[in-house]
Image (cartoon, rainbow, N blue to C red; front, side):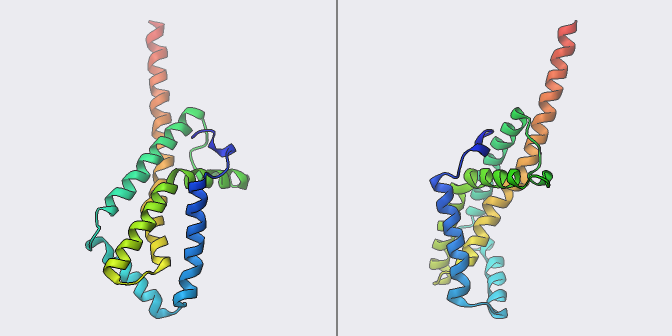
Length: 172
């Protein structure tokens, strides 16, 4: 994944991105934008963790963390910067990093969208597209973004301490 910044989005990542955009546009068109809809949205989101299919609140973030650690280790091996946002003068680098994140989490995002659609249809007896996107992003994309940089940081520190230990033992 270290050289992924030179690649374009995979078909799976494109599908996830297109689906997210369509759902974000469809929600307000379908239900409108009102204070009642906003309060229902936040109430529904607050009720989800205690309801059916609670396992996804463990499954999706776990999968995202595994992908983030994998990519963080690749960042450490390649010597790339630790933070997505550290290159404020290089927007193309930020876009490339976000593209990598989308590629790494596309399957998890698609799974999250599908699981939330099933949840909504079975529990709420309707489908709210914006809620599905919020849940999928919160459970998959956000944990990935939060974990990748620390994973790279600790991998880099571990590698440097390991290399320092090897060089001191080779002097003996």
